[in-house]
Structure formats: C-alpha cells, structure tokens
Image 1 (cartoon, rainbow, N blue to C red):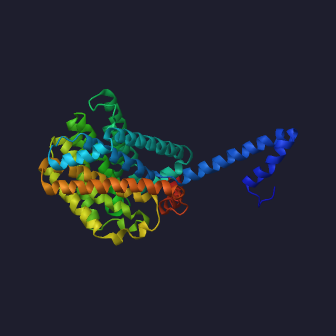
Image 2 (image 1 turned 90 degrees about the vertical axis):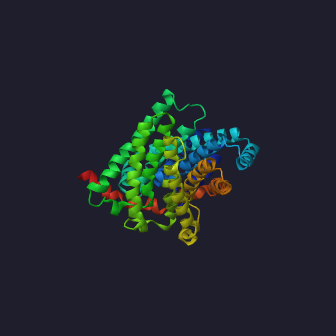
Image 3 (image 1 turned 30 degrees about the horizontal axis):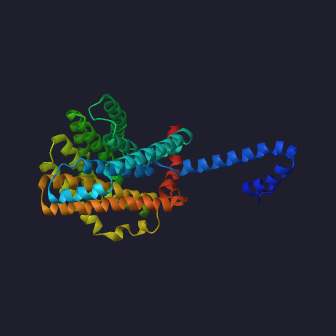
Length: 397
C-alpha cells in the first residue's frame, strides 16, 4: 500500500478479493478488523484530546431547565397570570415533558461523565493542565453542580430519604474539596492570588456552593445549607468586587468564551433561590439578590457588541447563555409568587419565554452543528495543550 492510500481506499480494494477468494479472505479479514479498530481508536483519541470540562455546560443548562419545569409544575399561586401560565404549561403535557427533559438531561450528563472519566484515565496530564488553568479549573465544578440539580429534580427520590442524603454527600463533597483548593490558593500562592486568577468563570465555584446549599435545605439540613451558603457568598462578595474593578484576568478570555459573562447575574440569581430555600420564603434578602441579578442582566443585554465575535460561528460556549437565564427565570417565578403584582408576572413571563426559547434554540443549533462540537481550533483546548509543559515541570518538582 502506498502512503497516499487512505484506510478506506484499502478496505474498498480488499473487499472484492474477499468475496472471490476464500484463502485470501482468511488472511485479509484480520487486516480489515485491525483497520476498523485502529480507526475507532483514532476517533476516540481525537474526542478525548479535544474534550474538556467546559462541555458540561450542556448538562448544567439541561439540569437548570429540569428544575425550572419542576418549579412551574409545583406552582401554588392562583392569580390570573399564573392561571394563564398554568394553562400554557398544561398544553405541553408538563408531567411528560418534565420526565422527557429530566431523562434527556440525565443521559447527557452520564455520557459526558463517561467521556471525561476516559480522559482522566488515558490523558491525565491534560486533566492536570486543566486543573492548573485559571479558567479550566472552574469548570471542574460544573459536573457536580449538574448532578446536584438533577438530584433536586429527580422524580423518584424524596428529599428526606436516605438515598437522597447519600447522593448529596457524594456530589457536595467534591465541591467543598475544590473550594478548599481554589479559595486557599487565592490568598496563599503568589501567581494564584485572586487578582491574578479571577475571571468570570470563577463564579462557578460560588454557584456550586449555592446549589449545594439549596439541595441541603430541601432535605432539612439547614445548618449545612447555611454553611455552604455563607462560604459561597463570602467569596462572591470579594470576587464580585475584584471583577467589577477589572483587577482580574477577565480581559484575557478568548472572544469565543465571552458568553460566560452571563455568569455575572447567574450567581446572585442562584443565591436568591438558595436563601429562599433556607429561609422558607422569598424574603427581603432574596429580593435584593434578585434585583441585583436583574440589573446585571440588563447591563449585559444592553451591550450586544460584547458578544458579536463569539456569535459568528457556533461553538459549545453558546451554552453559557442558558443556565444564567434559567436561574434568573426561576428567581422571577419565586418573586412573582411572593409579590403577586402585574409587573412582576409580566417580567416572569418574559424571562420564562426567553429562557425556554434560548434552551430550545441551543439544542437545535447543537444538533445541526454536531460536527462543530469538537473543533480543531478551540482556543480553550489549545491553551490547555500549551499548559502541558507546566504540568511536566510540576511532575518533576
């Protein structure tokens, strides 16, 4: 075989001889099997080297949507706006829609987790490079956040049962361990100071604590919920000031990753929901956090040119739009149920329509552009490859 011949061309050339010559078939069948196996291994290797924790944005968004639908299904408000909303939801068979959505979110999360587990087994140095990266380390929170969201929305698990408790520990402990590592680095290591490492994705660590607090509050563990909430909010205040004063590496983000700026209003939105679960009501604290997230959301959508370059070509970073919009819509639902005002319900309806529309649009775009999910020119994956020499130096030390 010449070097210019592809493996597929070889298979095509060998196939006729297989059907006409039994002796040749006996010797060439193993060759075809080896070619197929090599082809599959090459394809799997390509996936594992390009895959990173940032792809868990998809499962995070789907988990947020599952929580949104479960909240809407359990709405107890009887005013006109909520009745209209309930009529629209009932038209989509909410129970069946929720089960399909939750099952799809679970399947997606399991698939992504298996792929990342294989990456850990066969390309551990790339995972270590991700951990050492100032953006990549924050996405290591996302798988655990996704599992906590699915745990809260599980249709077959009650919050105060033993399986729920065991799973909460299983998913919350990694979040706390990452907290200890990352927050400790912020004030003990020179190049890991917050002013050097902070960027919009750093807020994912805060969101991880808040989601864990919400899940703990729902199973009656108020003290654990308050502990996680205080840990997340204490660091959020410092992080927010750092990012607001532009003392961080936010300007070092590639243009394709600018959708992560939506995390600015995701953190206070999630905080308002977590505090509502702890306090038992959407009180003044939750309202203040909701108004802050609403202001940050308005500030971002008034600057569409910030996201122009990231929207030129589809990439998985687009999924960063969905989860923040979903938790903002969730907070608006709780706010509307508490206030029972016309403007509050109009705002709730607008945010709900926007959240569901964006999530459906992202699913459609992802299906249409499946081949672009693992691009060769992913700036984040390229940066991780450049970090491999740093990993080697760390291993030597």
